[in-house]
Length: 621
Image 1 (cartoon, rainbow, N blue to C red):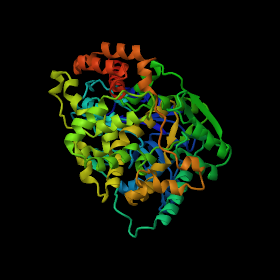
Image 2 (image 1 turned 90 degrees about the horizontal axis):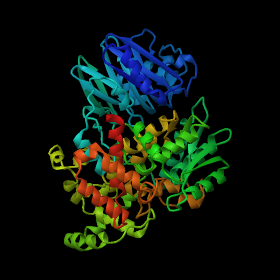
Image 3 (image 1 turned 180 degrees about the horizontal axis):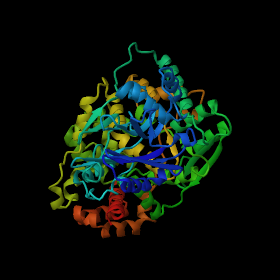
Image 4 (image 1 turned 30 degrees about the horizontal axis):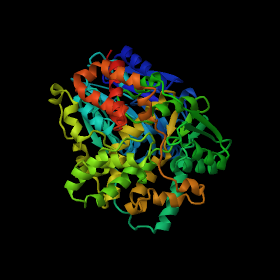
């Protein structure tokens, strides 16, 4: 795992500064290459082929191609043998060199042969072309900006900001979108004029112009022929094991993050079956049992005899929040970001690579929002007037509960989501900007820059989806819209802050494509999530784990904002320049008062605004 950067002109000083900004991503080696038409930088975290032969930037045999690469290619050995048979000569045993030779043989079609996570830049000397590539699922990040006839790119925004022609300016629409979704959807970022390359796309820069091309999408068409349910269970189990085994390739120690949930427990089971030596597991614990999964993680750790490590989080220091946000580059209000940042820091003391269960909730329909949208299909038969004027108002008056999943909390969240338009059905559990709050929240001068249409991108993704049933349409939306720029961005940035590589076997594209071909009602059966996945793990995991519900390891932030972080929150929101310039302060005061008095749970909105304030202070001052 590494950090990459570069641009379309020759400037050794700038590329060195950019490389230095990425040192946390690759503390083992660094390298740069500059010529008239390109400057490339690389920071290396050595995982495969620890020798100097794996150093980057890396060239092909005749020096006509140059590569900087971030990621892992899990089928690189098979590709290497294939390319040697075609006459290619290798100078290393790294997966990076496989990309170079595959590109020589197949061009852009080489991307179809790569199985792994990757973001890379490839310079072709003959055409002076620069190609930026992001993997199918979007596991590894890649950003770019264009000024006049110049291109600049990097693994993290903070490296791009080293160029003095990049103005640090808030993207107004990104702020609006973020307050609803808790992340900024691609291709935008919080910085105006800096963009993410979307998952499954590459960007070609040639003759002073750039073009974005989609090379992969997730097709949800039913398998032909469709397997029986029992056959699907067996195939899923086989592909899961195959994916996990492929992700164990490493020349350094590795472990696994174990939450006690179904996905991470499945990884532990497969690693136990195929690994050698003691298996190290890492988990997070809280004193509040409604937020903690320690008990279930211990069940799995004891069952497989792992070397188990627990990180107890009793409080949340503001310094941790600010450090994590610096590494994120832009606000992202995932309440598990800071705990993950701390867990990665602890795990790095023992291993260099960790497997993690991201992607299972999206691919297998595991989130509560899948159940919520199914319930809404029944709920919409209640007349709209009764829903909005009677039920919603009654539920709104109920007090908030301190527990993570109390019945009242769930009713309030469902009733709030039910106000959203039909096109946002699946996001009723995951969209946090109440339509009644959106207009008064923003300062009148700032509102002029906004399009109050948060679901425009949802409609665009829906036109690309070929699913035939509602559950699979929602799976597609999670996989292609929600997951990439929230969950996966968080995982990459929080792990690389400690130079720890996280691998996500459940997002192996072969496994994902198989799951996409199965009927939605095999994933969500009634209100039972992950049905087919649970069946594939019977007899492999304890029943107590197979049949438990989704919990997650997010912070008890709503309680912290009412207690330990109360003063920090108030001071931050009242002193922030960006909050004063963009928000209606009287509305924010009301949100704070209602939250502190437990009349409503505004933790998502307040935490989101706090992150905006911290981001602005860290990146603009």
